[in-house]
Length: 115
Length: 114
Image (cartoon, rainbow over the protein chains, first blue to last red):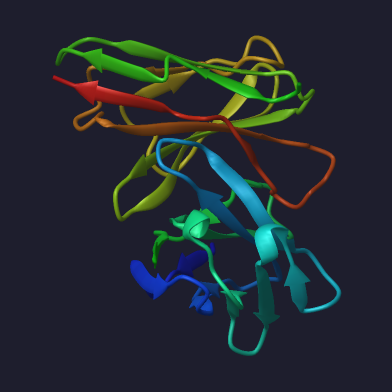
């Protein structure tokens, strides 16, 4: 079984500042990794994903994440945030060799961008 | 446009009543999922179905039931046995042949028990 830990429940940041949202996972096998964003009262939208290859993954809206296998981390970063980035962000993992393909999600990080 | 449609968006029910949440997709995806979202707890898997006429329990299936009679539809019934049903419910689907687990989500249904 796998699990995901998002270390910060809330991250306040000023507009145009950089931000990092932290995600660590636990799994006994290789994994696929995802970041999703959720705006209030809406579903989740995929930001980016790591399946294989380059450990630096670029996504939509200027976000990127780096897969670090030795530290079992997949932190999300953006060099300069906008007010519109205010939302909840979820890290998720699926194991590569399981018959159960459902994603396991972290508890979420609420990004609050202030003017 | 292709996508996942959940209805109703908001639903109120009295204690002791069953309620069914609808989920329809026109993405031609094989697999469908129901997640429950509570503040500070992320998303927890209720049920999933990888093929028509087959489904499996997730991590919190007690008090819920599902059916998968058609590829496009995966309704969730919240029964009176569910002790704390007030939550935001999300339906999702994935491409069965692409074995990564990537999910596509609907807009969600918010259930409030009065």
